[in-house]
Length: 437
Image 1 (cartoon, rainbow, N blue to C red):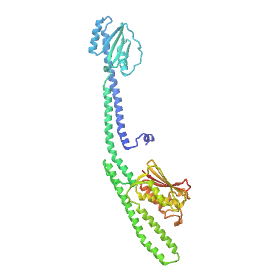
Image 2 (image 1 turned 60 degrees about the horizontal axis):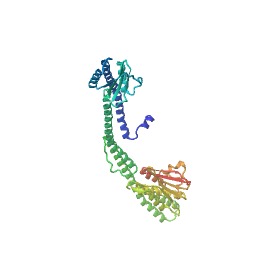
Image 3 (image 1 turned 135 degrees about the vertical axis):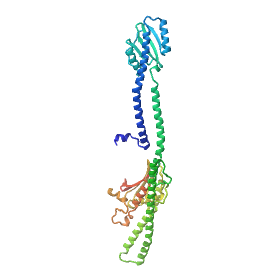
Image 4 (image 1 turned 90 degrees about the vertical axis):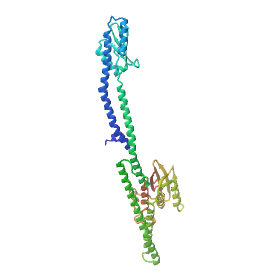
């Protein structure tokens, strides 16, 4: 599509549908108007003007130069009664302003018709009276002055046609707006339901409605929602079950290692078992945060203060700044876990940590900065992959099992937001968490 057309087209479906309906209607009205004025208006105006010019020509012919005042009065009375033209005679009068240009189409049509009938000079004034057109004709003994009603020169069908065209167009437009708004409402509800589902919010009240195609799309959305929720529930249950079942043999392994006493490679085995326990704890934490928790209003400012106060340790308090209204519908424990994971990671690698939350339009942004070594630009996406760690040795002292930030991004995207890593003004890394309002 041409970029210019894209710019002028309405953005909404309702606007585009109305444009599709209105554009042909306007074109038809314009074509009808042009055809009407060319084939009807010009002809009617010309015939009316010629009729008036013929009546005036007959009056001049019936008015001889030797006519007396009584003859003129009798003739003028007949003209007023039979032709609806008021005629007066000004003896010895001389016309002025003969060459003035016509003011409008009525005056121009009458001038053309009079020019075909009279060789004598004449003038036409369409502005001197509100209901009359003044025609003056120069005769041999004076000036004949005729007041012609405008209704004899102007057809009211033009106004009737114009009002009918505009009125019918407005009525059709009103009906189209009401009808199309009712058709667009189900589509808008479907879009809102899909957006809320993408943000992890409840859409259980959504029901298919509207036209057949819209109902079909809504039914497909509901079926997709059920499949996604079922898959999430199955994955969560499987992960939780596997993690829980593995804890029992791990506990037996730990007990047996303790009972064996000092043996060759014993410390390495204990470290491996401890790492497996940490991994299982991460799995269980991840499983507990999915699917089962219902969204509820959460004040992210208070939550950030609470998590920062809980996680701060070794005398290293986290500086927190909040701005504006930060209440959104969200899964409280999941958001708490995401913020806690980022703060723990920041405190692990930096000595100074600052957290801030503010509202930016339709989004709430949480930033957590540290003054640690930071994350190379090429690895800022990799750190969100499960089991990825910057420390290739996977030393437990330098971090977890590589699921912390993966869980953070999963939670953020489950709420319709995202998590990214940038360079921090403090010199380390900045974790940016964005959530839709």
